Length: 235
Picture 1: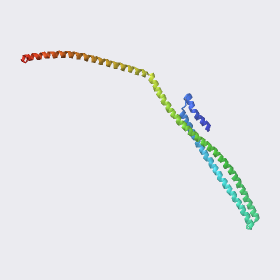
Picture 2: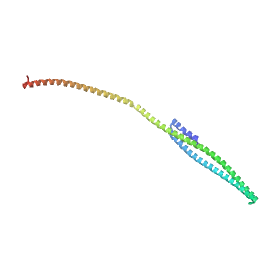
Picture 3: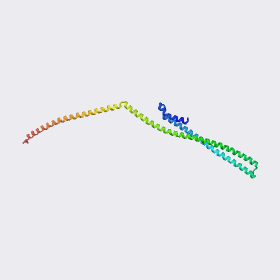
């Protein structure tokens, strides 16, 4: 699956869930991220291989060029020895010709290796661009996933709270509270009424005791005078 298809799959996750709720957008996003990471691993592996091929081609180019230069130097030495008389001129020409042929052969190989190196480096640059795009996409969707998870937590909590509020209203809790308030008000009024009755009862008893007390004082005074008369203490 290429990058565009992967992005399309991830981007559709929340939309599908919103339409029919048959798929969890979080699960889809996480699966999409796992797929992207697998693609990234493959791209990194391919990039490493292509870079290795470019390095090998560069090393081969340098080696072929070094051999070509070495064969040219050998041809020069052969001609110089023939000129000094240290080597038969015909033999020197033959060997120098062979050396120049080897030089040309290595130059051809060097040119081919240089072309391979250029192609590998171009492919490596393209792969590196794809790797960077994958990394940026993964980072983006990891942040999107964090945001999505936070939104799910908030929305779930909100649903639960609203559900509780709806259940409280539908079950008549508000009406029950109103009835309880009315009952408490009745109890408070009844307690106040009994308090007033008790106060009235105490008032009547106080009046009775007061009246009896006044009569008792009068009788006690009469009894005192009678006792004094009996004792001859009256004047």
